[in-house]
Image (cartoon, rainbow, N blue to C red; front, side, top):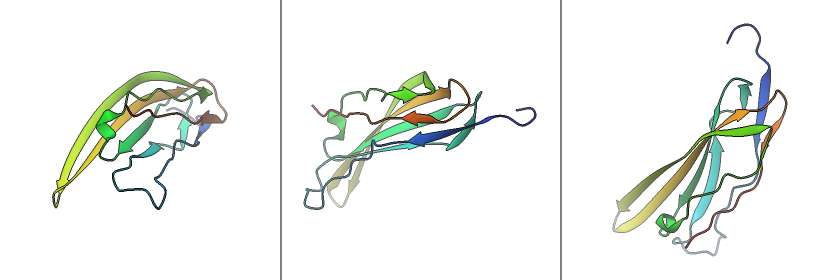
Length: 117
């Protein structure tokens, strides 16, 4: 970028769900992350929602959560991983969205929902 670009603070809210302490290891966990906390108005940020657990492959495509001052410009891109460690199977499915600011100022990614079939 040329000069001093206006910066946009991107806050990731919710989308963090961890199994309760008494839950089985088979229970899925859901996490979300973004690849930058501040971006310029012409930049893009990636939101990745990850489902991990034995039933992760049963996750339906994750709908993009409600956005404030961000627009959807790409995705979802889906990736899957299966691991075998000491006879235990672990599966991970990730959905990545590319987002871009609508205008300078704060932005939010609100809570979303993940449905397992």
